[in-house]
Length: 300
Image (cartoon, rainbow, N blue to C red):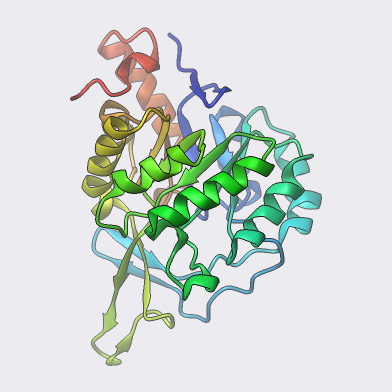
C-alpha cells in the first residue's frame, strides 16, 4: 500500500500535515506526536521581524469550533532559523514554512532569507492585511494575488504554496490568479471571518472584535471550495478546514485535495494527526486502494 504523495516535486510519506498556527513549530507537540510519522510539519507564520500579536482576549469557543485573533504573533525569521529549523531537522518529515507579511517587501525578505535554509516548501499566508492598500487582505484581490505570487516565485528557491482566503466571492478566481502568478501548489481554506458577543458583559468576546473561525463548523464550506478549486486549476491542493478525523480528511481527498492539514483538532486531541494518517490507511485497505493518489478527486 502506497501512501506517498507528490507535492510540487516534494515527496511526502503520507498526505497528512499540520495546519499553520495550530502546532507551533512542532516542539510543543513532539512529546505527544512522533513528528517523523507526519507527511509534513507546517510551521506557525513567520515574519521578517518579531510580531507581538493582538491584545487579549484573542481566543473564543464557538459552536462546532473556535475563533482566534492571535494576530500572527511570532519571534521573527532570525529566531526561527536559529531555533526551529534545527529542531525540525531531527525528524524524518518535510518542513513547510508559513510566511506572513504586511507588504510585498516583508514577504520577499522572509522568502529570500529562507532560500539557503533546509526547508522543503513555503506556504504564503495571503490572508494578511496589505498595509499599502488600506488593509484589504492580499488574498481578496486577484490582481494582488497574482502580483505577490509572481514576486515571491522570482526569489524563492523552494516550491511555493499560496494559502487562499475563503473570505471572497469566488475562490476559483483567486486560485486562477495564483496559478497565473506561478504558484506550485495551493492550500485552502484559511479561517472565515466571524464575530462573537458576550451577552453577559455586553462586549465583544475578542479584543479585536472579529476573528478567524475554524473547526468542524467550517468543514462543508472548505470541502466545497476545494472541490471547486480542483476543477478550476491544475495545481496540487492541500485541503484544510475542520478536519478532526480520517473520515474528514478522506472527504477532502475525494473532492480533489492531494494532501490535508489538521488544525483546530490539535488543540483538544494532540495526537489527532497520527489517528488521521492511520485511518486513511485503514480506509485504503477496506476499499482496496493500492495508492492514496488513486483517491484524489475521485468524486466529480
